[in-house]
Structure formats: C-alpha cells, structure tokens
Length: 162
Image 1 (tube, rainbow, N blue to C red):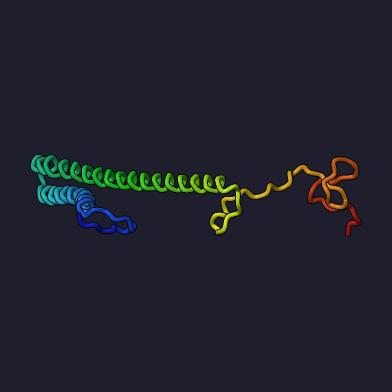
Image 2 (image 1 turned 90 degrees about the vertical axis):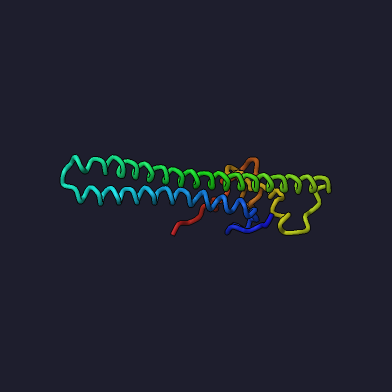
C-alpha cells in the first residue's frame, strides 16, 4: 500500500488518509445542505404574506435545515474528538517508549557497575549530590557544627550596621 505523510511526519496508508478527509468533508457537506434548506425556507417565507402559506416552508425547509446543520456540526465534533483521541494514543505510546528507554539505560548502568557515563545525555540521568538541609547550622569557619557557637546556614556573622 502506498505511504504518505500527513503534516506530522508520521507515515499513514493512503487509504486511511482518504477516509480521514471524507469523514471531515461529510460533516461540512451535511451542514452546507442544511444551510441551503434554511436559505430556501427564508426565501419561501419572505414572499408569502399569509401565515397559512408560510407554515409549509417553515416545517419542511426550516426544521429540516436546522436538523441538517445540527447533524453536520455533530459529525464535525465527532471527527475532531476521534482525532484528539488518536493524538492522545500516539502521545501515550511515545511516553511508554521513552519510559522503556530510560529503564533500559538505568539497567545497563547498574550492570556496568555504576561507571561514569561517556556522553552528556547519559550524565543527565545520574543522581546529583543532595543540597544541605535548610535547618543545618554552621560554625564561624563554615564547618557543620553539632554544638557550640552556631548560626543558621546562609546567615552572616553579626557586625556593625550601617
């Protein structure tokens, strides 16, 4: 079967592309037919002055045209909904593939004995050293002090104020 791309770079069979175009086009055709019926209803009602003679135009053209416009709109919404579901399914598949690749890279790293990665892309997945806790206290020299003269991290020594 012939392959084509449809804007996203993903190859799709030609038959599927034709089905997608026809599904979108059918909603527009049905809505346009409803619009033509509504226009005919308006033109028929506008040339009659007697309400009894206007009623057949309203019943046949007005209600029928309104029904076709609503059905065409529903077909267009259903087509967009299906396209959104297909896009979401593609995204979920890509996330699953990415997750599998990350797990595989982590497994290979563990089997290699935790050796340092050779490429920058692999280095991004290594665990970074933890920052000191926010409530750690340090002495005047900047060393962690379990007791004695201490101050909270990030607080400078007291001095004269200007």
